[in-house]
Structure formats: structure tokens, C-alpha cells
Image 1 (cartoon, helix red, strand yellow):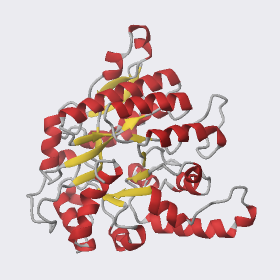
Image 2 (image 1 turned 180 degrees about the vertical axis):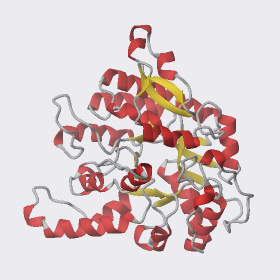
Image 3 (image 1 turned 30 degrees about the horizontal axis):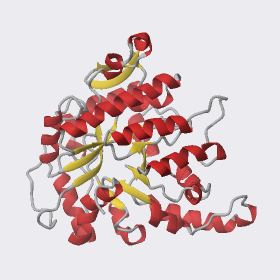
Image 4 (image 1 turned 120 degrees about the vertical axis):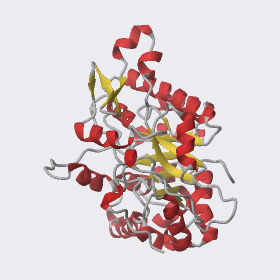
Length: 385
């Protein structure tokens, strides 16, 4: 069974309804864990929790046309195209942190037991110019999403945010995050610039102390698509063109982990790649092998392992709908891929998640499907052996 893509009539998530649950072919008792969902922040937590002396610097959480956005001085910092996308799913019951019971009901309606929930519009904070404000916002968000996780009975696992620009801040925020019970954290694909306005290079010596802290604390690093605006203006279907561009953003960071030596210097690190599918993995590994061999005579850093070994030992990826990737599962590794609904996004399987689950079973068989639709996410987060 190959799952066909939804017809043009599926509509916005806010207008969809879950289909009746049917037998997916999964063994009885299988717990489905969606490895990549999203949850909007619908509470003005930064202004509420900032100290009085800093409230004038606090980003505000605002609702614009039904979408929850980050703003300042009464204006959203998000581009109109992104706000338009938010308005397609934020009105959906259970889409945000303000109603945990509705969120769980939405998951159950599609046969999902647990989820890993990434943030939405607060990614705008990645580029917030005041670093003190940025880190304080991260701390407040981590406390908030950890409370959501606890109130859900650990059915909604929140993805935390950390200081990545200096090692002391990394230790401070990552230690706090772990103590709150969060199991992973989001690192931007584009880390911005340092205090001297130089682009931050994850694989540079200047970042080694940051990676050493991450390795020591022991939580997996999560990377996610969707940070970058389109590279050029688009008169037609701007959202679709932007999404197509954002679906394949991982190669630069993938190269830094392998060819840049991050994993050689810090072999305890685990890395997850989210919402970019899995079909990119074999081609990226193949190209890394070819490049490592072809440019070995020019390399100023010896790569210690075959690129395939780095993937097999350190990396994981999630997919929503990826028939091609499932055809290549033996090359990727059934123990390294994680199914997701991507609820409540436009490209999510909300409304036909059962059909999506059944297609995984048909593609990889019931035994491996148990790992793909649940067990691997648990292992990634350290919830299972």
C-alpha cells in the first residue's frame, strides 16, 4: 500500500475532522508516538513573568486573525505569510498550550498516544537581538512547556530551548531544562552571529565548549525545518514555494557534524532531524562519502569514520508522508526513523493519520512498524532502552 497525497479538497486543518479509527495492522497494544507535532504558545507568559524592571523589553504573545504570534510594541515580528499559515491551524481545538485536555483529545481522535511537541511562532526569538532577553524567554518557555508536559501526564513531551552562543549559558539553560523533565532541545540550523558580528560556525573551535556541555548533559539535539524565509520573492504560491525550499535544509549542519568533526570530538552526542522526511538521508550519506574521498588530499581535518557509521551511531530523522523514504528504509535503518502526524500543520496527516499509519505497516511490516511509529521516538528521548 502506497499512501497517496491528500487531495486539494482536504482544506485547512481548522476545517478538517478526524476519520473514524480503523485497524492499521499494528500489533495489539502498540503505542503510537508522533515524533514531530507542534504546539502554539497562547499565553502571554513573557510579559507576565519578566521582572518589573524588564517588562518593557518583554516580547508579547498576541492573537492576530486567529493565529498566535510573537510581537513587540504592539506589532508582530512575523512576516504576513507566516501569520497567514498560523491562521489555518491555530483556531483548531488543541492546537495551543492553553488547553491540555483538548490537545490530548485531538491526539486520541487519531489513535496517537503520545507526542513530541515543537514550538511554532516563538522561533522568532532565535534572532532576538538582546541576548539577555532571549535567554530569559527561553527559560520561561521551558518552564511553561514543562508544566504542559506534567499536566498531560507525560503524553505531551515538550521541546525546550537553550542558549547556544556561549558555553556557560548552554550549561545554565540545558541543566535547568533537564531538571524540568524535558527530554530534548531545539538548536537552530542558522545560529546567527557572535558578539563581533561574525557568523557562528558550529564546527569551529570556538563552539567546542558548547558541544562539550551538550555531550556531558546527555540530551539529544533536535534540528527542525522552517527557520528560513524564501531566498527570493515569489509572486504566486509564496507559501508553497517557501515550504518546498524549507523541506531540505539539513545538509549544511549534517556536513558540520561529520566533515567538520563535531561527532569525532564529541562522540556522545545524538542528533535528530525533524520534518525534512527521510528520503534525503541515503543521498546525503552517499555524497558525504564521495566528497570525503574526493577531497581527502585537501582536507585539513581527518574524518575518522565512514559517513554511514556516523548516521548509524548518532542520527535519527522523522517523516510525515515519505513513500520514497520508506522504500529506502533498509539503507536508512528502520531503527533510525520516526513517524509523525505533524499535527496541527497544513502538511500534517490530521484527518487521515490512521491511513498514514496503515501505509507504514504495509511498507515495512508490522514488527518494524512498531519501532517506526513509536519505539524509536521513545529511544531517541531516552524513555526506553
